Image 1 (tube, chains in turn yellow, blue):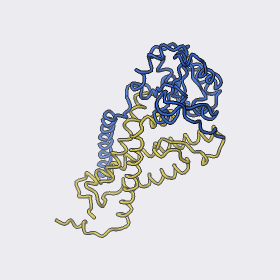
Image 2 (cartoon, chains in turn blue, cyan):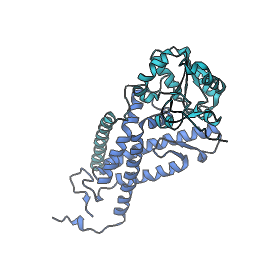
Image 3 (cartoon, one colour):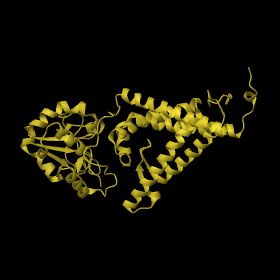
Image 4 (cartoon, chains in turn red, brown):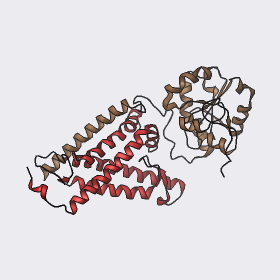
Length: 171
Length: 195
């Protein structure tokens, strides 16, 4: 049974969508694994933001968030509930980015250096990194997540959306 | 369009709920998992944005009711004959890989994040000791302070516990003897001091 969409040739949005999925999936799976392998280190790093006062909530964030990121990354990779996963990652990225900017500004203020010279371990799973570089990277990831959240279909996806219309396209 | 947005939002909520449940289970099953009911940072808020330095560390210790030990005092205690008799104890609060790479000779290990792994062996010796010197990496590292609180809560009198604020970094930079591997495995040649 051939759906008419299946035979449609690839176009630019298809390619952008696949690239966005690959980049987001690789980023979140990779960083999630890095944190899951050393959750104590991640716990110490997120404590430095001083935004979560309750110990159990801080512990839950450090213990569960790495696996949560891996889970969302895998959903994007295989193309299941991709739009929902993209919205969740978008919300996380927006929150993380604001926290990184806030902490970078606080460090710059404390050390008396320009904002873009600040380097610290943001707890993102990539070690010590320049704050401006990290913000630019996150900006790119946010754009990728936005694109996917607005995409009603995607190539190479098992079940891209739960909407009743057949939204997934085969290659 | 609104119907599509509603479907996407519901999808996102289901993904968040499923991911949260999976994360909770995976953490519970992981041998490296975080104990949700524990306070890993007893005694105060994060010190990540402090001005740093020995003065800041001493202020922080004073606020937590802990006693600070200088580099010279730590060295003198290591050379004290009571150290060989177990009356003076050094406790390394860093993680296992850091401890194995090098520690103050004879130091016991107490990574308080893995308390159950180290405390049963350490506690009898700590209860018998007259003076306990706890250290971590130095600088903004607070793990020695948390380990000290763990020892206090386990019954070691507060006035016997001291925090070596310079930590292993200052010790190593001063070129003092270092032991690598297990406790009592012998001295390693000390690396040259960093500039």
